[in-house]
Length: 400
Image (cartoon, rainbow, N blue to C red; front, side, top):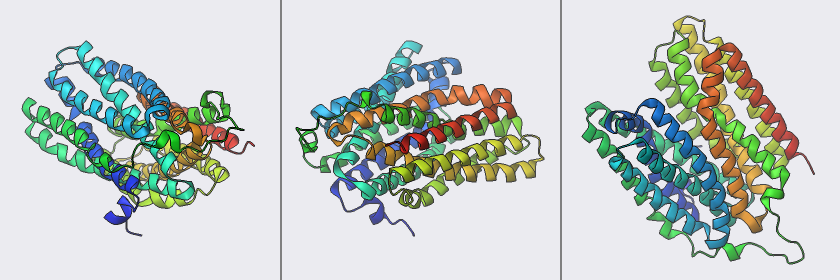
């Protein structure tokens, strides 16, 4: 079924506001994917090692922000947290243009990545508060489609700056990304009045749970972080493996990334429909881990092949990885929503998003330290790690 604009924005004012906001912010994200690394190294003058270290420190800040934003959303409202964190991120992106040293870059990166972590928690909290059951999962899936398509468009737009290749062009792209993020706050005015903290059901006879004492939920969030490393495989491991360890042409990387974007856009919503309850979510995540392991083995198998054969095997690996991506996300979203205490929606979603942030931070080091450094043995280690995370998630999901 074709996803029209009307289907993507939905009928709910909350979904429409989030869709338009996320679309603008994701366009900015795509622009950043295309130009930020070159801006940091060629314009600011930082070494790649310094950029990597600064972003790793910022990743730790993003974890803390994702966690803290959940508690804050429960107290002052998720909409307020989302608006403030979005403004902070937009300001931080503009501030990159004035960075002239490694400490300044790291400080700004902490603000930008931290604000993004808080945004994800606030968005998830709004979904938890305003939607229920299958509708909530369907909305989350549609928002992810919007994210992927907008990121792709933003990355395509960034080719203009790359083609010009001047510091002024890179700086213009960074300021454009900043403006897009700031503009993404405009649709948020369409969100309902901030009654979220009081809107949660209350039952004086049953006190609300603390997510930190909910070991089942914390365990699933931690395993979600492990599965999140799959995105590092796609964006870091696959490009390095293709260009350094296979005979496939370098253009294969772009082909695979575009194919992944298309597949996620087409199949994320149908994948969400497969998850009907918590047990189904656990099974879905377990099955996704098998697909992830298969993708790892296929990537490894492409290494010694001729160019044409390597491209064919890499496409198969990408197909398996993309199927795993849409299934694992659908299952993980369902578990994050359905196992949370609605009276502490922000705190619970903060725990889940902390797992995501941890996986995002660790992914480059894990992927390069296994598959890229040790070849087939490293790919086997990654496959085993994904299988263990999927099996563990399934086990926790079936606990009573």
